Length: 495
Image (tube, rainbow, N blue to C red; front, side):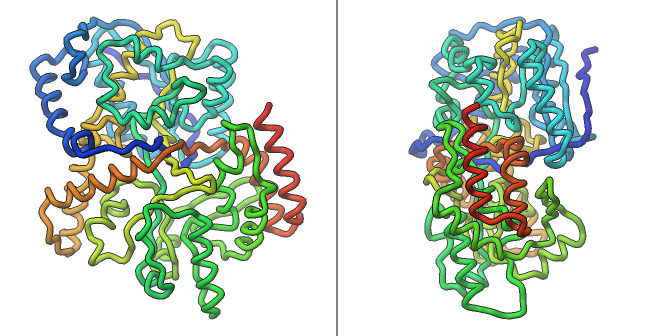
């Protein structure tokens, strides 16, 4: 019997917010909703030939020769700790099990580290992978969502997946949102590919929509700077003893955090901490009250969730809700769309950074094949399988496979409607009407995304955060901090 050895390290996480996809307009015939029938056809085909590789019926299907795969693969990945003891709901672990079932001659060894937050254990995983890549001891496949994979690709340590895709007649680009491939491309190559993506959205409490007169949700995108301006203007025009928070997860560190890809632009090797807008807004945001949902230490800025913070969010005056576009029935953006009339939030709006780019994220399930792998063909077969893999039981963000995205949204809508009805919310529209409406919104979001949200935690917590901490707690002047950051980050980006 095959086993999947797991290295359960210290609990770690890096919940890097997720955003990106290069702009690409999609019509309905090429979108999510109309791909569901194709997915059903694929499932029927697999049921008839259970040992076949799960490729979609496409014009190239007749060229795809079934392979009897065999061999051993080593895969390393950080995994959110919510999957510990519930591994079958994790996309990567579930896909590995399914792949071995389809191909009895394959053994996959999973080196899993369960994660909770940014801490020394994530640093340990990062160091382990960097050392392995440099010394030739890295696994065949690495989940690089929390790693500086652009640096690895520049150093020739990762395979160009475009070459593998183009040489594989069974791989069909049209099955996927090709703009996502484009967004993750770097220096004309694709060195990491996501199974699923997410993007940052904000909603505004309707009470504040009315109080400010801002038609939040009328535009498709909003920047953190624009949101802060709305908040700051309200606070200044409504002085009172009652504290108003911008959002439960927002603090004086958020101006740098939410614009990090622009301020520390690795792909263009440029730091922008000396730009006047950053100096102005960092000085203004310093006075922002820090919500109890955030723990700030000299080393870390940590989101916490416990009974006290839940009570805080229920009772405090909070202007915005900032979250990833995930589809939990309890808190996901689909809930706001379905129950808008009876809900307390505006429609969700996509975040745009200072450079005007709307970023998507893939902090997890972003796979790369190492150049040193001695089994690249088998590694590619698994990556290809993973991209097309979907099961109703897995917990994930929106799959980049169009057919799977359609099924995913259908399930998310179904679960959200069931929960709303259980709570006593009356749903007037039909399931099909709601699904089409939600699908059109998600298609629009995907078409607006045009870049990748990455978060170099090593650089942020070793260089940027300590300087901002010294400014926020009056140990350094803003001029000292921005001058130091500009110098240190520029040097780091060009190492």
